[in-house]
Image 1 (cartoon, rainbow, N blue to C red):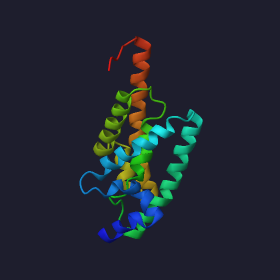
Image 2 (image 1 turned 90 degrees about the vertical axis):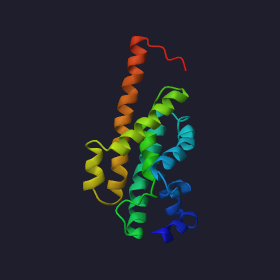
Image 3 (image 1 turned 135 degrees about the vertical axis):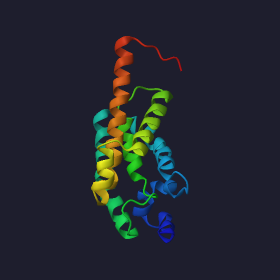
Image 4 (image 1 turned 90 degrees about the horizontal axis):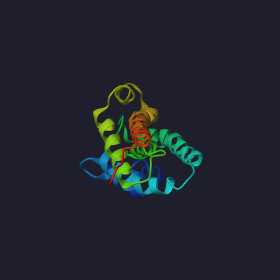
Length: 166
């Protein structure tokens, strides 16, 4: 498996699947992959919502093929070094969040919580769906859970006038 890690900086598909190298951290590669997704999120956040959603959709579809190909080449179901799914999952979680570093931090923490805890249907996709689709969809589901909670919080704060002074 470690022989494949060398491909992270010589093979473009591995480079993307391994989150530009962030998935190579020996401890908590998913967390480091999620952190590495933040600078790209900051660029995506400048787009209007339709273009943001389109870019994330393209990243998702590409990820199904990229992550599936790398996992197959590595002869593993879902190698820990593949973190492109964390990138896409975080971008889903942060879709149309209000401005502020605390919203970004809340999105990051919620996404990691759901990705690690794997409540249903996250666990279903993780255990029952094979290939690139399975690799991507558990993180998509974790991102959707996070998105829902973030949007409910934003709505509640806006509706009930709760002030956040951070």
